[in-house]
Image (tube, rainbow, N blue to C red):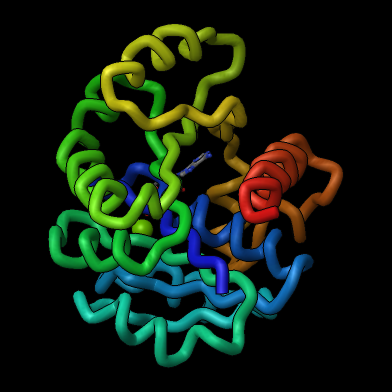
Length: 208
Ligand code: ADP
Ligand code: MG
């Protein structure tokens, strides 16, 4: 399977929202599993709240990478919704991943808080000839602001790219999650669904 981990040790950074929407989109491109690595169980709560058709399992111990090897074979895509705060869980997610997306809200403070995660990722990349690939994704961007350039400058020191695809702050995301569904399922023609499609295409290209 191709394993994509959504990681950011900061709670409330947008991991679960991004993981659910990406996994739901990847489902159109092969069997997809969403792995809830957070003991809070938000992705499992989302799954129970609706009928998305997306399989969700909880693997919230630091043996995540080994457990995934045992069960992952049935899937083409696995998306890990990362834990907040628990360092061992983050390290295990880094080990399990082929690609890491780090959702970050458009603020330097949020970016700086990712420094320890970036260190773990880069240590892993050095030990394994560059795997996993990793990039920041700006989420909850405000309309009509041009934070992009500032973020791009702030991110330069980290040695990880910032995807040009941005996820905006839209109430549709929160509504969809509350109802156990996704923005794509609620309104396939919405701007939210469109930005998820663009991000998903970017991920698919990376695995081509
Ligand atoms: P994490 O999993 O990192 O703790 P969540 O995905 O639970 O983060 O998001 C934290 C909060 O931000 C939630 O209230 C969620 O509804 C909201 N949120 C996340 N992404 C967006 C977005 N793109 N637009 C609007 N609200 C968002
Ligand atoms: Mg979460």
